[in-house]
Length: 228
Image (cartoon, rainbow, N blue to C red; front, side):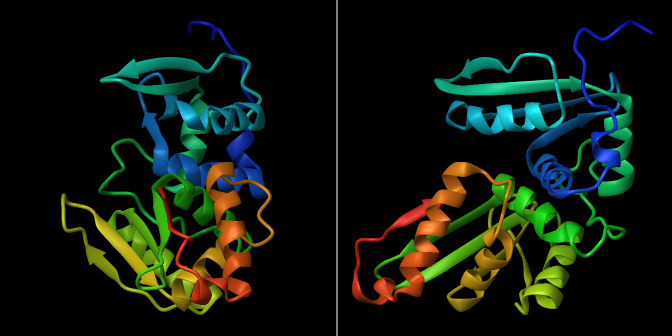
C-alpha cells in the first residue's frame, strides 16, 4: 500500500465527545465519502474556510486546506485519506457514499450525542431566518426521508417539538419546516451551550435569541436575516 502523504488521527470517529459527534453530523451533511481510496472530501464556500480549519485541527490532519474557483464561486477543500475514518463514519454514524437520498439516522448513539450530531448536520444542511413582516421565525432542515424521520423523533422526544417530514417542492429530497415557537425551541436545543458550531451561523442565532427573549422581535421590523 502506498504511504500517505499526510497524517491524521484515524481513530477520531471511534471516540466520543462533542467534537466527534458534531463533525460526524457535519460530514453527514457536507462530506463526500468515497470507498475507493478510501477518502473523505469536504468543499465549503471560501467564507467558511475558518470552519474547515477547525475540522482539520480536530482530526489532527497535517495536510493543507486547498482552494479553487468554479463559475466565479471561490471555495476551500479538504481531502483526507483514511480507511478507518470511512469505516467508522459508515458503521457508527451511517455516513456512506452517495448518501444524499439514502442517508440513515444513526440509532446507536448515546442520548447526549444527538444534539451535537444534529447541530453539525444543521450547520451543513439547515436554514433559518426571521421575517419582520410576519414576525415569524422559521427553521428548515433538508435531507433524506429516513434521516429526517429520525431527526423528527429526536426533536419530539428531547426538545418537545412535534414536526413532520415533507417532500421537497424541488428535487427528490425531503424537508422539516418549522415556524414560530417550535423553530425557537429547535434553535435553543441545538445551540444553547454549544461548544462547536459554524461561527457565522451561531453568532447570528445567539444574537437573535437574545433579541427574541427581550421581545424586541415584536417591537421592531429591522431584524431580517436568513442563514443557510
